[in-house]
Amino acid sequence: MKRSASRCPVPAEQLPIREYEEMRESWFYSWGARNLRGYAVPVLVVWCLSWLVSGPIAAVSFAPTQFLTKFLVSAALGALVIPSLTLLQLYVGWSHVGHRLQTKNLPYEESGWYDGQIWTKPDDIFKRDRLIVDYQVKPILNRLKKTFGIMVGCLATGILSWSLL
Image (tube, rainbow, N blue to C red):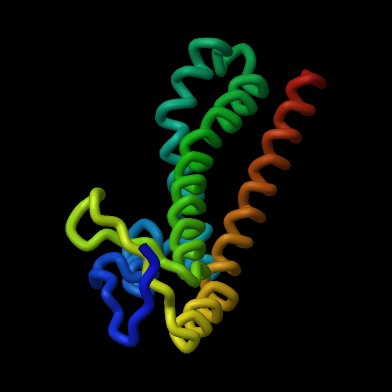
């Protein structure tokens, strides 16, 4: 059933603007909205911590005393897995909120999965939400895409250098 009303029937916790504000204030999801340093430092910390997993695995395969370069390359590439998954979660979360903000006809549930409704946003709310997407959410998604591009470049460089070893 489609319905539109001047009073918003969507429960407060399901409002896209509320979801957006919660993500901006969230410890994890706020990474994407921070300045460059505030974004890069946590990503690098996660990559460094990933060495705690990838380092020992690489050391079993390539003893650092004998094959230092192979050890470093394989550990560094292996350490990209956890940051990639972390950034993927950031991307999925911000993408979801961006999609809900851009949607004119907003699906919601009043009390459970069985009573889904659709609310058509009034033009002023829809325009406000679109501006938030254009000026807040899209830059975060673009930053994450660029980071994925950098990671793919690192992966390609690592694979290329591996073939030269």
